[in-house]
Amino acid sequence: MKTEKEKMLAGEIFKVYDPELVRERRYARKLVERLNAVGELNPDVNTDFKM
Image 1 (cartoon, one colour):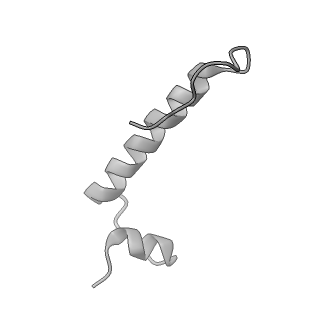
Image 2 (cartoon, one colour):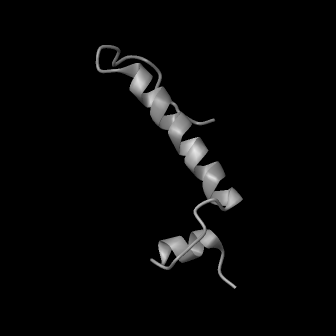
Image 3 (cartoon, helix red, strand yellow):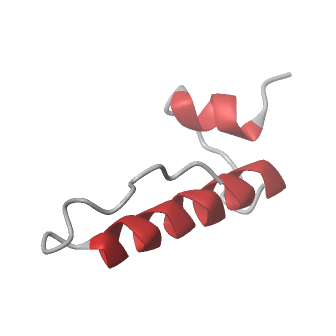
C-alpha cells in the first residue's frame, strides 16, 4: 500500500493532513521563513539552513 506522500507524488488523491506531510510542510515553512529573514541586504549572512 502506498504512503500518502507516494500518492501525492503520483498525482493521486491523498490525505493532506497525513502526519508525515504536515511535518514536512512545517519544516519547509520554517526554512522559507529563515531564508526570507536574510534578505538581499545581507549577502554575507550564513545561509546554512540545516535544522
